[in-house]
Every structure is written in structure tokens, then in C-alpha cells.
Image (tube, rainbow, N blue to C red; front, side):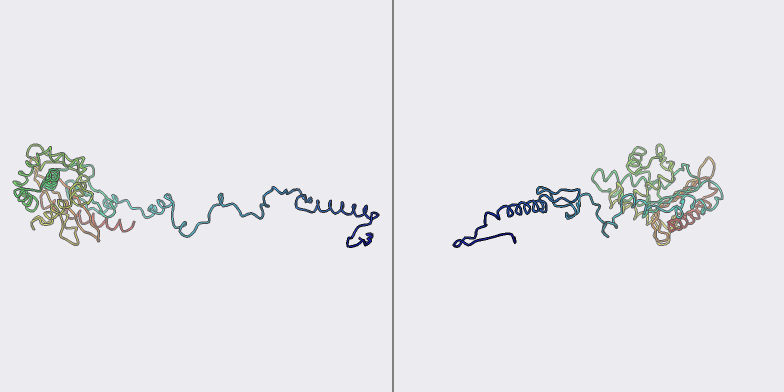
Length: 337
């Protein structure tokens, strides 16, 4: 600017013509310098940013669509289905073979055959020990099945039991009256009626006796657990009032029949039904007991079936010893899992 020369003419300031060339050169240099230094044409790296370009990525917020969120306490507390199953699985070290536990606890039979089956109603776990795989004649325990069949039939017909049916039912269960059983066996249609009801109750290995020989019905311990479940469980096809009625009768058996699985009960009264039958061809006895007991604070459905017993008393002794030993073993085994 020191080369600029000016003269005054009135109020205007003019550049002398002789100074125009240097001024023009300076202006061109300034224009070129500005071009190189403005954001529209900065040079100095491997990247050229134009006016249409987006802001530098370093200044933009990181995208969230592809990020994995950090788990919150609520997220980490929510296990996947696989994790839940693994957490609930019993460790191998504490898994107990309930069948083996019962087998080890059962006293050695003094004679004949004997099988025990138990179901813990709370956990649904069951165990069987003794002469497994056998079928037994029911003797009078089938009377529970006969009454359950009658109650199911009445329920399907939308009616209650008649006065005569109630009288017979009470005598059949509480006193084990055979005449009453004959009457109700006829009412349900005999073998066909029992089969129809047992299909509903889930009994698959029970064969009714022919004609009027209901006591010669054959069954298995597992089927008897299914029958007791039908009598006690809310999932039963029998309505709650029918179940309560049958259980009340089983709670009220005559004192001389309060033996068998009741020997294992710690709370009482025990809902049970016993059966005993001498076999004419051998002179040996069938002695059975089924029912619901409380042991170690657990509700257990217990079935003890036996045959080939030398006498009724011998059979009762074996049934009671087996019931006590088996329920105690099962409660102990369940406590360890």
C-alpha cells in the first residue's frame, strides 16, 4: 500500500492511473490466496471437502442401530429359556433314583409277592419297588373303582346319587360290604361300565372280573396310582364334590379295617381301602391296601399289593412294614433333591 499515490479532487478519492497495475496484481494475488484458503477449496490432505459434503464423520453421533445395548440389571435377571432349564436341572450329584431308594428300604418279604408304588402329590414324582411288572387280583380295593365309576356315570347323566346308591356306597367303602358292591356293580353295568370309567381315569392295565366276580379284577400298582389320582386331584374327570364324597367315605372305614397303608400316616385320618381274599386253589392270601397318607409333611398316594401270603395276618404285617419303610425312604430321598 505504500506505493499508492492519491490526489484530491473535490469529495472523491481516486487512484492514480500509474498505481492501477500494482493494485490489480495485488488484488489478483489476494483473490487466489483466498480461493486456496476458503472451505470450498482447501488443499492440504488426502481429502477434499466440498460444499455439498456432509459434516465430517468424526463430529457426527455414533449410529445406534447396529450397536449392542448394554444389559441393564433387569435384562441380566431375565434368563434365556436354555439357561432357565439348566438352572432348574438337578445336579448329577444330588439326583436320586427313587426306585432304588424304595427297593433298598423294603423289608425282605417273608413269603409271596409284594409291590409298592408311591406318588408325591406336590412334586409329581413317583417310585415303585418290589415285584414290579406283576398284576394282582384286586379283592375289595376294586370297590373304590366301582364307586368312582358310579359317580362318573351320575355326573355324565347330570344327576346325583339316589338314596339307595348312597346307602350302598357307604356300606361298600366303610364296611367293605359285598352285597352293596354287588348292587353297585350291577348299577354301573358290570365289567363294561368299569372299563368305560377306567378309560377316562387313565387305567390301562386293569381287567375287570367276569360276571359278578368283581373281586377277581386284576390290576397293577401304577393303575392304582392313576385311580387314587382320579379320586384326589383337581385335574380329575370327577367333579370336586364327587371326589370329596368318596374321600370322606375312605376316611371313615370301620376301625377293624383301619390297617395297611395307614401304618405309614403321621397325621390321620387316612383315606384308604383294603382288600383281602383267600385263594381257594392255593389257600394263600391276597392282601392289598391303597390310600392317601401324610408323611414328613408330604401328601403321598400309596399302593401296596401282595399275593401268595401264608395268612391274612402275615399279609397285613408285610403290607404295613412295606408302607412304613417305603414312605420313609421316599420322603428322605425327596429331601435330598
